[in-house]
Image 1 (cartoon, protein in one colour):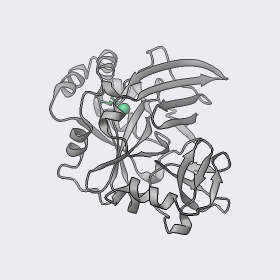
Image 2 (image 1 turned 30 degrees about the horizontal axis):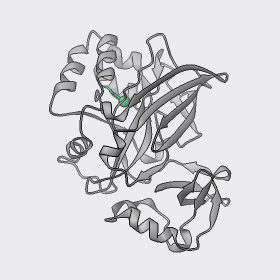
Image 3 (image 1 turned 90 degrees about the vertical axis):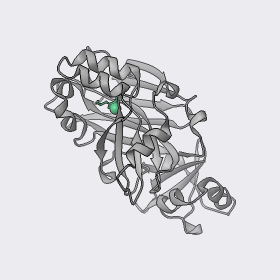
Image 4 (image 1 turned 60 degrees about the vertical axis):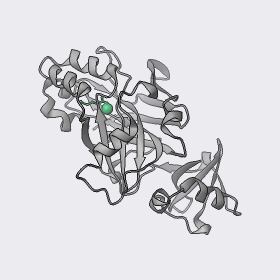
Length: 285
Ligand code: DO4
Ligand code: MG
């Protein structure tokens, strides 16, 4: 079951149940107008299966504008959860190499705050590259959707846009490398009902197009993530409350070469099999 947010013809944000590649059901007549009560319920999939049996309006997916699938959750990100991320980061930064090496092996994972929900970039909108950065890359990541009790209720696709030269210069610059206008995209929807064993079989693919041509393509598997999802979720919720739940990006396993940097108007396409595609163009911010 896939759950999205979309703008209807009058500009009102509604919840959508994705029935197939081309159709949404609008559960507004059944009183479903927000994600949060569904994500907090004991069994959202069963609840939505019942709702989907009702005679709900059908909407063509191609005709609606999808919104990011978040409401008031904080967006956080885990780092250095793939070997590929650790080795790439150690290479780009003499100064911080030891820190990346240690955090990959440590019991406590690395987390950083990534975005407020209202700043998240929706599918089809533009992600940002900083005008004061010289080396910019997308980070295609599986995102865990957590309710206020810290339970993983779904998965979506995240793009943890990063200014690699700023991060590489000094790890204390991480917030500037990671948090700026357009630095976090999520979507296209929340995939409910998959457990960790199923999600670990999903592939993550990144394709970057420039003037219609592919200029970088890479692939990894969710199964390469070193830490268990429950472990990440329980660390995030240690000594911290999230009244509206949280979204946790789980780190990147695809790192373009040092010779590659994003440019304005590039198209970033991220696929996670089992979820779908998240596509955004790039602009300088
Ligand atoms: O340690 C810095 C950030 C790491 C990160 O974003 C990742 O591994 O995905
Ligand atoms: Mg990342």
